[in-house]
Image (cartoon, rainbow, N blue to C red; front, side):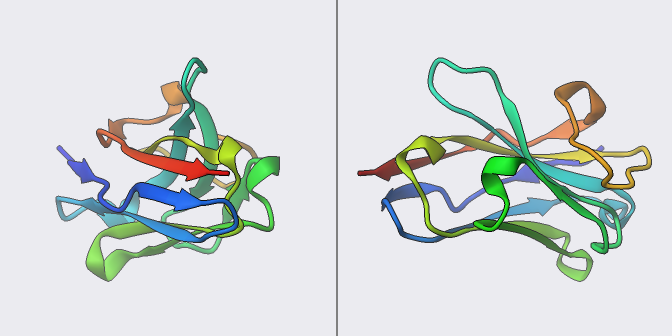
Length: 127
């Protein structure tokens, strides 16, 4: 069993940067593909970015390309989401999630692809 904890949310202004982190328990973190998802008020949860087990393959939703960077440190059992040039429409609860199965980063992940979820952290971007 893997537990995921995402500290690091908060209130920022438009144009600011924020880094989210997701710490995983367990010794098998390095085997999992990891993803970041978000759910804005009134919306369904959507995919943001994902990274394969090695960190070599990454996929972003179009709205995140050029502004967000996903990375991981397997020695620290942690995955990160660096968010730059934040916009009010980035306001959402951000979730990290882990996938036991293979992932080649050739497309987005969906809720049903993921095996473990964090509880989420709220990011609010004011205009």
